[in-house]
Length: 133
Image (cartoon, rainbow, N blue to C red; front, side, top):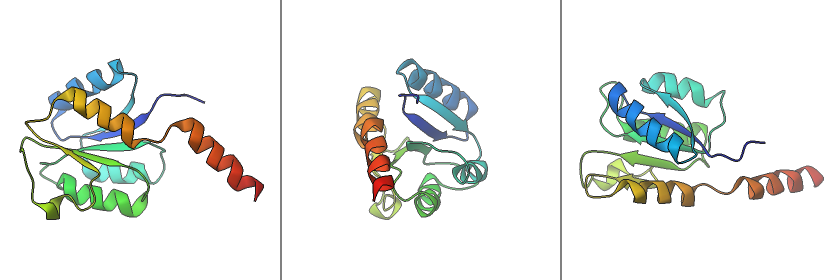
């Protein structure tokens, strides 16, 4: 079993997506990047990931709406929303576990992502305990 955290990263800007994907991979995350929110939703139904990292402003579907859709499909997956805004209305953050805007540093983003994801060792223990019942 691979020990790296798998991140579903959705950003409609290919340049931003390549840059942040590179940073995340350097920090030992496994990244599944998509530029289309609808494609990302379809992927949620057939691919395992530990955390969703979503861009807030996308033309086809906002990151907040995508977060809501993902939570309906995969309720226990943490969602981090990134935006160019320092604050967002509370109604936009209902299905989001953390928001990172302009004022927050990337080191905080990486730390928060690691905190939000349960270690795989515990997840495997939970899985095995469930099989014994």
